[in-house]
Amino acid sequence: MWNLAVEQLAHWQPGRKTAPGFVEQSRRLTEARAENPWLKSYSITRDRADRWHVAFPVAPEPVPAPGIGDVVGVDRGVVVSAALSTGELLSAPTLRDTEKARLLRLRRKLARARRGSNRRGKVKTAIARLKARETDRRKDWVEKIGTRPAREFDVIGVEHLKITNMTRSAKGTADAPGRGVRQKAGLNQGVLANGWGQLVTRLEQKAPGRVVKVDPRYTSQSCSACGAADRKARENEAAFRCRSCGFVANADVNAACDIRNAAGHAVAARGGPPLGGPANREPQHDLFLVG
Image (tube, rainbow, N blue to C red; front, top):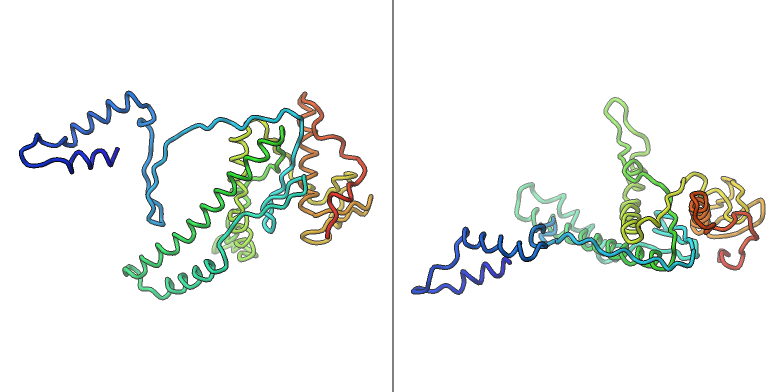
């Protein structure tokens, strides 16, 4: 529409009829909107990276369920962005090492630049473009990762986490300063960088009514094979070893299996088929062995 308006003005020449002005172009736009409803609702924005965007509100069709009764659990983490109960470990893309080094140099330049100077403005724009590149990659990753579970499983189990509360600053106040502020800030950054909230939001949009949020308590401590809860079973960030039945697995995958079991039981409890299967079963050593 903008290009058409510019073209109408550009084609005017002396001796010709006056080019359409603002009022005439507005009238024609109103007529066009009557024939094309999608022209009643769009937004044009410019982000901090100095990029222009045109957005039209479109409600995409949900991804159809396969109808085979399968359930998958998704455990979100900081080191591993998303672990699936199938055994897959997925990581959200981030900046490359060369890009991270450039970002560090730009931040040092920003610290030295005088406030209000043109140089400072250019450096801020360069930083914003790098961060926008990282954000775009994460959004693309979320789209791809969100589509596959919606297409391959009937029920998707996730932990019921309140991301806003989890990423709240720990600085506190002048009278009551917070503790572990730097560590909490690092955790917050990790949660946001791994797209925890974006992933579940897109899953709910792609698979409406098929995403089950389960209680997150003990999912990292309970054995997905026998159901025993033991805080010492998680030997480190990556290894889980049940001291009751001897089940060994990647810790994130075990948590994803716990989420899958809980989601399956929740579906069965509200009248659906027992999709999750029993929690007490023989350990699947071959599937989840830690190398």
